[in-house]
Image (tube, rainbow, N blue to C red; front, side, top):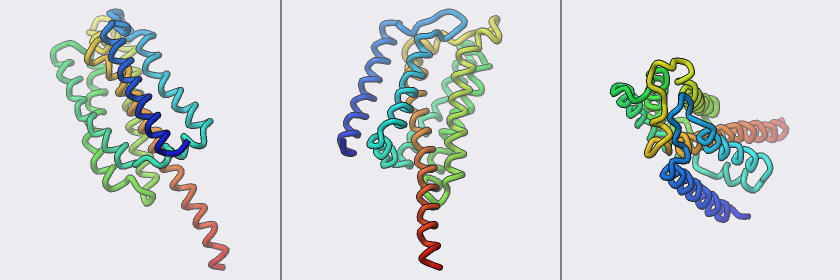
Length: 211
């Protein structure tokens, strides 16, 4: 399959994924008033990531397509995470626990605020290590948010838990937005690692000729 074919397929899968997350949320499939977010949210969040990793590992064609994507575009998309201030607002009104809202909100805002700079200055083969570091920080922020979001009620059962995150519109965050951005981070890291491999390969070819 050519790049254009993978592009259409990927766009179609993302659209179908969004429709599924939206429809399931509207039907209250993810709704959970208990101390935990619930298995349905966890499955919706992690299944796309696992499928992506499997596809990337087993399909050379898809892997080449992923390498061909613009790291600048994938990084600038992370700017939306400035919207993490919503978590802080909900915490202020007692709708989310601070143990989740504060690190998730501030972490998202930090990644979102720095994304334009990283996209314009670091998303190129001249800065692979720094680019990877920022992407890892973005991944860590998402992992911390998901972990604290699913365990907040267990850590402190006397504070507001996170049932707000299991109904529309916020249910789209753990079931669609977070895993999609997680995948974008993974692609950018794979691209940067690919830059390093190509640089070393290029240097290896130059050395014998220089000798």
